[in-house]
Length: 419
Image 1 (cartoon, rainbow, N blue to C red):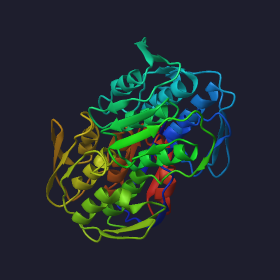
Image 2 (cartoon, one colour):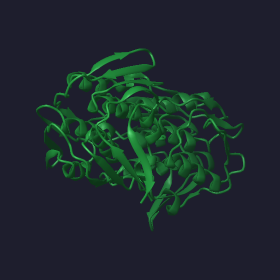
Image 3 (cartoon, rainbow, N blue to C red):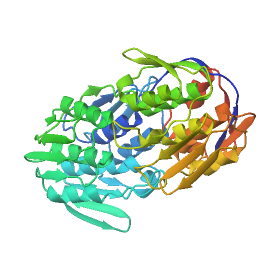
């Protein structure tokens, strides 16, 4: 097990390139089991632990997986003979549930462990299962596993009681090979869902309405392999934007889609950052101590829950008082007690954190509790006085591609050491 050591107080400057989006790549990897002819090729895949875990899962199902030195992955599903996703492979990864729809749709059966992932709150899969049952699947949940069967799924009208990203993705994939038309109401409309739909349409699916809360899928009889380059990761991009702001630096973030980060950009401008952008880059310059800003998380296009911890770190050193209201997950303030160890002044009441900005944080040994909490502690360490030691950094490897190397390139004094 490794730890990160960060010597704070360095103003970051330079440029950094953002990797492919984790939340695009993982559902695409799961969808690679669906073609009956050809191979799936994905370019610019991030080097993440979740990607490694997913490719291991696909390999044990019978998918042939090859990867080159540029992180381009080729997946051949022609020899699949196992429709089982075991607990020991998926216990750390919420997105493992995304093999359920593709396996059931293509092969008529699947046995998938109830998923794990970050301990940030309840994320039940009941909405996935209700929708699949409505499409004709027979489903049992027992001994920690979901067992599903269907001769062929049938199109249906699905209305989600609340927006669910993985639920929307699972049903889109399942419906792509179902008989007839499926309509998903109150669908999630994140850019990564649109990216998945573009990818599936390249494979021969007939999906429309993505990017809105009403998606229609006209099922087809078969899909074919294709080549696709996933979107850049807007959460990685937002994290580097805040790294520039919290260190009062000047950083250009390349290979991004600025409009996908509008909510974060808006808040950074409110905090006092100078921001300029092109079609595929953003430059963030912060000349003074940031101003405190209030945020509330919500589904896209509003402020993303995956950026809440990072903005909490920024508000910890900002001028003034602020609040951060978490409307997506009920247990996503575990980073607060670690930030408090570094001198942050934060009080949490139910789903709201009230923050009184302090002029400086002081380095301390801290422990990462989940993926985005890891990012917030790195940001705090970059701004803190002294050397911060962050334990349990395996969380960060699930969602950030070579983060210490990228930070080193823009002036951070950060290194990885064994515990």
